[in-house]
Image (cartoon, rainbow, N blue to C red; front, side):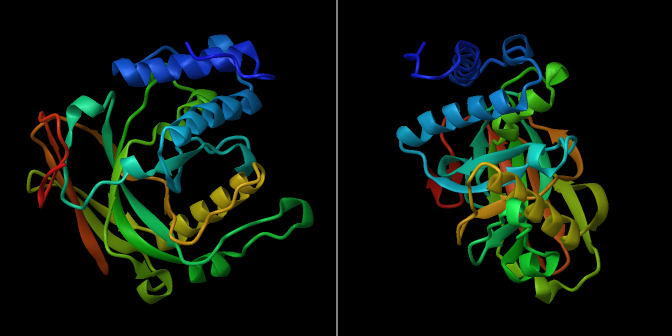
Length: 273
């Protein structure tokens, strides 16, 4: 266990260490509520501590994601931080050995074109049109990777666990304004076979970005140009098995693909990494 940081409650330190051990051993851990209860502030402290250690270790922040829990208002909405080692090339084959409870989700990704910030105290909040003008949109696939046993996960667990941020791929960006206001027909394929069809909403993704800007403002954070936001998942999450290959398509957006392998190394179209 790492050294106790001055001013950090014992239960926050213990929760962070439980999460880190789950990630190191690749073995899901029980809920953290026995340590921190349903205290959102302590959950945020756990997430912040784990991320700080990753950043100290050399990781670089590349964006954020909106988690599945929306209760408690925007300021308490579960969000996650995306790091550079989570982003893989479009078409990559990800080793299942680096994942715990992975499930594939289709999403829209919004790349920030200019700094997005909010000041809720002054009611200075970006409008939906300002967000639309400030991002470019692409298709994305994420293999979420939750470190807490799925049947036990709660809002505070999801916050602690960085909203289950795993590995993700994104397609080529397109300005949201160029895509029109209507829904985009989309489909997800597994090993070349259709899994489901539905419509994806650009506006819903923009609302997610706005919500994340507000949530981060409450923590003193801003989205920087070039960072990406993964919006809420579209359609059901699907399980991951070695040998599978997922592909997603939507009208007006570049397709994205992600496969899974038993190899211990990440494989791209250019070879192994």
